[in-house]
Amino acid sequence: MPDSAPLRIAFTNIPRRLWAGGHNYQRNLFEVLNRYSPGTVTPVLFAGTKDEPEEIAALARIPAVDLVQSPAFDRTGTGLLGALALGRDGPAVAEFRAQRIDMVFESARFFGWRLPFPAIAWFPDFQHRLLPHLFSTSAYWRRDFGFRVQIASGRHIMLSSASALGDLGRFYPGISNGVSVVRFATEPPVSLLATQPSDVIAHYSLPPRYFYLPNQFWRHKNHQLVVDALDLLKARGHDVVVAASGNTKDFRESGLFESTMSQARSRGLEANFKHLGMIPLNHVYALLRASTALINPSECEGWSTTVEEAKSFGVPMILSDLDVHHEQAGGNARYFGIRNAEALADQMLQVAQTAGPPTVRNLLPNLEQRVEAFVADFIRLTRDVMASRSGSTAVPD
Image 1: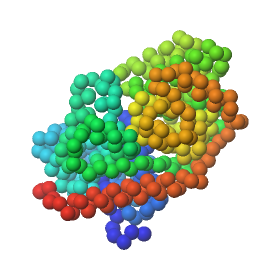
Image 2: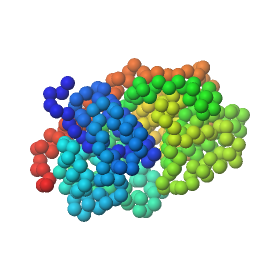
Image 3: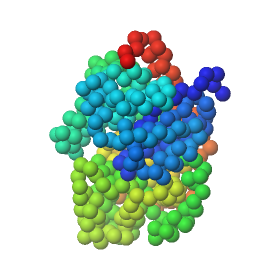
């Protein structure tokens, strides 16, 4: 047990409908901090008044998590204006003070260059720099400006991979901020693993053998390549099924989901590419554990949550040939080019033909070591940032 009072760290809620990976990241972080280092950190989750009640209630049920709902976190944009014009998001800072916050964790939210608390800025990836064609001019510069103001404000930057560290140096050279790489590992709670996979498979009318693609339907997640690969396999006489799940709305490209599904139907792939929609997390884990393999065809990742979860159960993986995927999975996955549908089809066929009978996988015994390392790295980062702040001049109130 720690000798001092828990460090109270402010987190802002990430709705699952907006970014499932970010939501799952914070949920997992809260769970494993309590499991492996109880009493060290108290996550204080600040949510808007319109956030999904059941979703934030589930997070609040995690031991040691404090939940605060306030209009200051309603994503109206007024807080950002204050952060930029006055140097701080006044309503948010008032809430932080009322809750005796020690440190702020910024994720896609900037609280001002005069924020009177130590702060960590998490940069999940540099998608707008790597795939600029997927962003409108305004969306590109809004995202880039957000990173730049956090850098200029002296935030300690947290990244999730060595690949992202290389991108940071390439796109924002010469910065003097503290930078830390904290590779996350996931360990889902037992409560999310109690659902019988056979019941979930039957519920969605899936066959015993299927590949699983649990990515939000965003352009860079590259679902189109999977449809193309299924088309090639069908032409070769192989009837393969991919079950996909996740949010179907891409804020940058309305109609993407509908056009992709229409194309799948026109190719006669209705029974091969089955999208299940936004499904409960216990169903996600059930389908993952019983799948033939996970597919992640993404064109950009900072550190893939779905890959990390597949690793936790020893699920076979077929991944796009990204540096970060190699960093994450090494030799424990098969790879294909992000534009190479034929290579993906070949890998899927090889896995399907060599797979044993359908099985349900449990958490691997070596998982605990990876999760403990993640928790230790995160706690070390928070202590380093607190120590650095205490040795510097505080921002005046």
